[in-house]
Amino acid sequence: MSRNCNMALEYHMPIEFHLGHQEIDRQHDVIYSLYNYFIGCNKTDREHNKCHETLSSISKYVIVHCNYEEELMKNIVYSKRDDHIIEHLQLIEITRIFQDRIDKDPDNNELIASYGEFFIDWFQHHVCITDRELINSLRQL
Ligand SMILES: [Fe+2]
Ligand SMILES: [Fe+2]
Picture 1 (cartoon, rainbow, N blue to C red):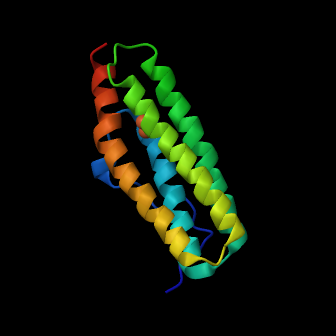
Picture 2: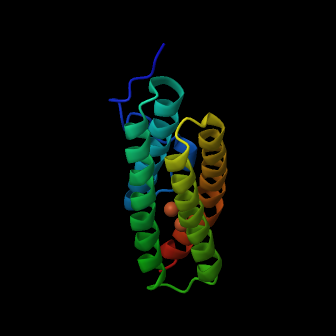
């Protein structure tokens, strides 16, 4: 059965990614939904414009989200700030590189799958370990 690209943001983040911070959880849910929409569009509908727009939305929204967390870090004692920011920069930069490559080669499913694998590995590690540590530090205020 074909997945309908008009169903953006239906793919809610699984409960194991919820960290108990309302705004961060909401933003992670948006990122996760966009990622799933992007992967689903590519596999089924082959609508390159929608794939392009969705990857562009991921790219922009990830920056908004990283900036939000980095603002929170300024108000607390948080020894892992630099390492956390490096992980953010890695996601932003690799997303930008894939965006360029996919724009030039939109029919390349392996490229899109590679980005998907990178993204979900990054998301799982970063949310479950790195962001969880940040939220634990925020709770100690
Ligand atoms: Fe983060
Ligand atoms: Fe985050």
